[in-house]
Image 1: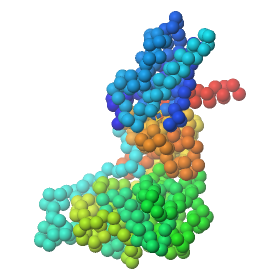
Image 2: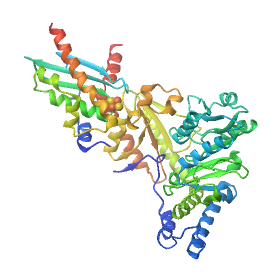
Image 3: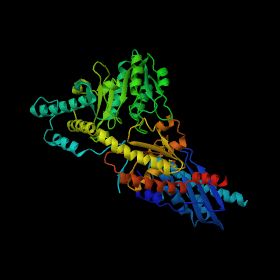
Image 4: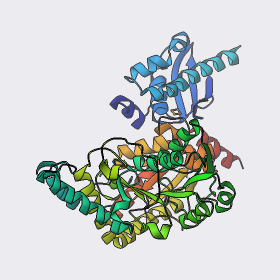
Length: 122
Length: 393
Ligand code: FES
C-alpha cells in the first residue's frame, strides 16, 4: 500500500532527534490515532537552519516527518508556514487514503514550533 | 533472508496437496453435478474428499458442507441458525474476541433486529465462563465461540461452553479455523453442533472451507442456487480445492505431533528471548493455554505498524494489532477486550510460526527485532521522556 518513496523515507529517515535549547519547539498529538510528533527548530535571522523530529507513529507519520523537516530547512519562517500537508504528501508521491490524516501531524508540529519561536521572542 | 512468521494469516500450500489438485483443473474438470461420465468422475473425487474430512472430524460425510472460505462457514453458521429460530429465540451470544467473520455477522444480525451479547474474556484472553453462564438464556438461539483465537492463540474452553449453550437449548458453533493445524478437532468431543474450518490455514488451498452441521440441526441457507451440498448451499463444487483441502487435512493429522513439537520449540525460544532481551515488552495471551505457534507482544513507546514495516524491510513477515495497519482506526478488538491499554494495543505484533521455520530464522528475527526497536524508540518522543524520567530519579 505504501509507495517506494514513502518506504525509503521511512527506512532512512532524516533529521531524527532533538535540538538542544531549540529556538522553537512543537509537540502535537494526532487525535484520530493517538500518535505523537515533536519538532525542534534552530532559527537564525528568521531562517530555519536546522530541524529535527521525533515521532511515535506509523510508517506514514515517520516518512512525512522526515520529508517535512527536509522541506523546511533553509526556508524563511514565512515560507515554512505556507507548507501544507498536501505538499508533503505530494513530495512523497502520495499516501494511501486512510493514511492522509498522518501527514497532518508534521504540518501542525512545524506551525507550533514556529509559533513557539514567535512567542518566545515576543 | 526471507522469513515468514505469519502463519495465522495463511500458510503455503504443500506440494503433495498441489499435485493432488492439478488433474482436477485440466483432465477431471467435469461438473460434479452432471450426469455424464465427466461429472461422475468428479463427483467421486468430491465424495472421497468429503468422507476423508468427515473421518478426521469424526462425523458423517453428509454432515460436511463445503464453502468458499472459513468466513463463509462462519457467516452461514451464525446467521443461518439465528434466522432459522427467529420466531422463538431472538438472542445470539458470541465472545468479544471472535474473528471478524463472526463479529461482523453478529453486527449484521443486530441491525436486523436480533439481540447480540458479547461475552467478556479474562486478561489472558480466555472466555469468562461465569459471565457466559449469566449471559446465555432460554432466548438464545446460538452461542458461537472460537476454539483458538487468531491474534493471541489462546485455547477456549469449548466443551464447557457447549454445555452451557445446550443447557438452554441453544445451538453451539465453534470457529476452528485456527485450531485445526495444532489441535485434534473432534466434533463429538467438542460437543459442537457446527464447526468451521478453512483450507489455507493448514497448508491447503485458499478459497475453500467447510462447515460441519450436525445431522438434525436446521439452519437457514444463505447461498441460494442449485442443488449442491444437499440443497443447502448453491454453487458448483470447487473440485480441485475440496480435493486439496482433504489432502491437506489428512497430511496435517499425520504430521501434527511432530510439527507441534518443532513449532513449539521455535516459538518458546523466540518468546523467551524477546522477553529476556528486549526491555519494556509485554506478552499478550496465556503462556500455557495456547497453541504452539503464536507469540503476541506489545512493545512500549512504538507503534506496531512501524515495527511491521521495518521487519518487512528486513524480509520478515509479521502481523500487527495496531489500527494503523488495518485501515480502521481502532486497534485490535481482541487486545482491547483483554484490557490491554490502547497505547499498548497500538504497539502490538503477532508472530506466528510454522512447520517450515528454522532456528536460524528465529535467531535472525530476534536480532532484527532488537535493532528495529532500538531504532524506533530512538525516534519516539515518548521513549525519550521515559528515559529522561529514569535519568532524573
Ligand atoms: S500517524 Fe497514526 S496512523 Fe499514521
